[in-house]
Amino acid sequence: MDRLRQLHDDFKDRVTFLFIYVTEATHPVSELGSLLAPPVPGTDSPETRRQRIAKGLKVFDLPFPCLVDEDGRVEAAYGGAPQRLVLVGADGLLAHDAGLGRDGLIGPWDLEQVEAHLRIALAGQLH
Image 1 (cartoon, one colour):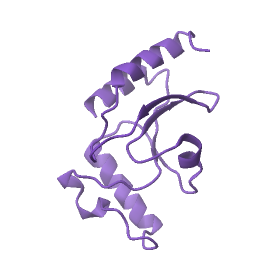
Image 2 (cartoon, rainbow, N blue to C red):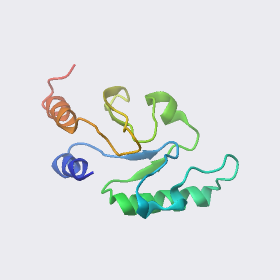
Image 3 (cartoon, rainbow, N blue to C red):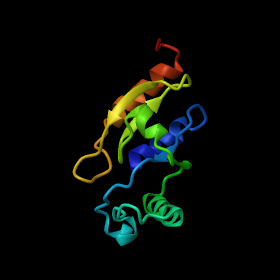
Image 4 (cartoon, helix red, strand yellow):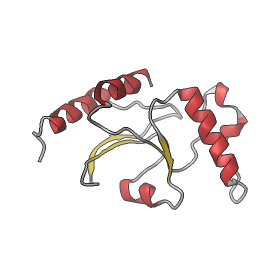
């Protein structure tokens, strides 16, 4: 997450970073505890989801806003999944897919490739 925070710091004046909560993930981080365990279908109230999101954001110390995909449209449009990192262009189209996390860990995204893509896009060299 440190590298992701660094990318945010480097590009925040030119790129909008958003965390979009699409579906609950199982988190191996002990600080998250049972509040972030996957909900039992049909028992996850909006308040419980907000508490879960707030606790996760605090633990991961993300410096950008979190939106909730309440109706599943973002997940459907971009193949969203827990721990997936995608870049979406100003036109709303998927510009780069950095992939999914693995083994319940955040990443392993190739953030050097993400940075290179951002630099090229901002230089106006992408079509």
